[in-house]
Image 1 (tube, helix red, strand yellow):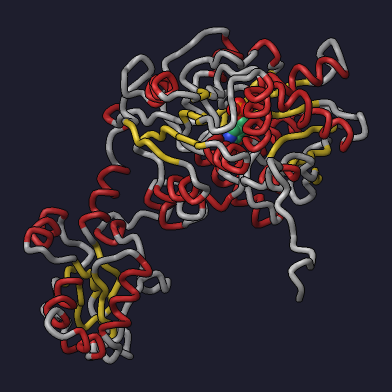
Image 2: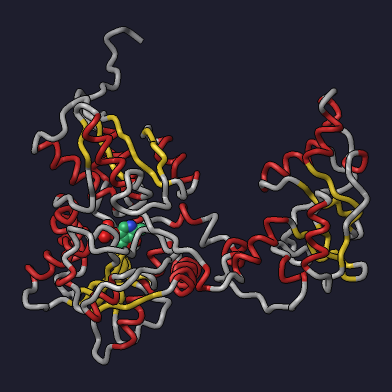
Length: 480
Ligand SMILES: Cc1ncc(COP(=O)(O)O)c(C=O)c1O
């Protein structure tokens, strides 16, 4: 090949083409649920390149800042965010060559932090147990950093008019076209209020005088439902659905656009999102469950046929270790097993149901180590061919064996395991369980000869947390 052959050229100052794939998301009809007399449609915002509806506002807020001269080449984009907005900004601003600095509360999952870092964003972790006005509150930290850094732009999705404008200019018109100008109601959630305000304004314009109802679906614990229904601000509670619900009214949220509201608890939201995946094959996040549950309630209350739209705001990928994980759901009390009233209620992974990761006595120590790493546990029960628990192997047992000569990773498990087992029958008292933990062991629950499962300190702590009186439970804060 000669030097003059055509090499693919990198267009100067042109961002990657992926940004042109933001928006224009598909709309599908729900066909496998009882929608009463209504037709219910879902706008699949999970299909945006960054996996959420926030890609739209990231693009709109960055472009507005560029046009207004608030963001110059070489500038830094700063935002306080816990989730999708950070991903959207890392994608959009990163692709446009800006430095991206995200201030993230410390309760957010490692997966989310890894994701924004992989996109090239820098992360400052701050406290999640403080409220607005505190110097370490995530929004205050971001505002301060933006002042300190030369050429920095503080995005502030809660007060940025380019946030609702993204929905007024793109999401709304797309829905209107896809529905062939025939819409009776749209069901939304509020995080920053951008979706509500943008869609509300657009639909009021194309079909004025409340021709299109704007229905709020709000997590139980958020203050917005009460505000719409009673016109007053109540004390907030806590909720586990992510991305929507608030303990204040965001600056850009025009709540006067809402015509009615439904309150949906975590359990119903999660169950609905999981059902949506099973029945329709649509993989949404936790707030998808809230919105679809709210839309279904609205639909089933109607006496005349209506055409209703709601959103799938983000992808379920981010919720695989939570809402889509049966163990997490059971641990949090969202999936209920019939209680036995004994120690077996504390067993999170039951052997009989194939839920326990085990190792055989003839397996190698390397196999044991890989299984521990793969499932993030520090010990494994050793179970023989007849299904009997004959030992337990933990990280210390492995270390003792291999620390001088790592070729011992090839030794069989039975050479390193502990066979002095702390077996307990299911009717043991919790106090006796504590004695086992004091000896640095895990408890193996056996009913006669039958191995039921293990109980670790974490299992006991999770059980106690779940049974903590509601009045004593601290409030969990939500971050958008
Ligand atoms: C995960 C998630 N993020 C964000 C939003 C939109 O919130 P807003 O436009 O009010 O910030 C929603 C709305 O349903 C959502 O479910």
